Length: 78
Image (cartoon, rainbow, N blue to C red; front, side, top):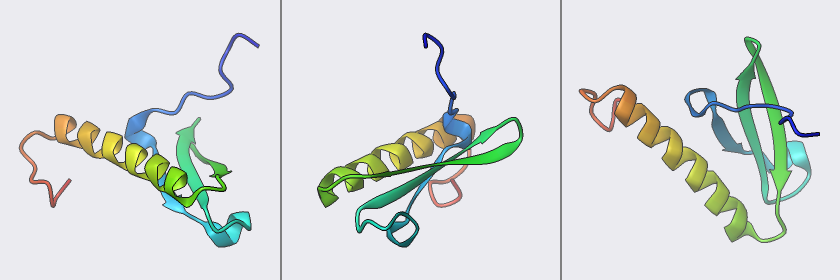
């Protein structure tokens, strides 16, 4: 297919570690909104550092988005 299955806007994106839900010690749950409904993608990697890098990249992008969206807010409030 030439069209993406989903578009995940950074403003509605979040990531959490979920090893128990996925059944892998390096599991990550990515949540996003689609049609006003929360959707989930579960991913894992055999290398723990790789999944931590994914988590940090997603959270850093979200943090940067919020800093730009709310320039007067402190980092703690963001």
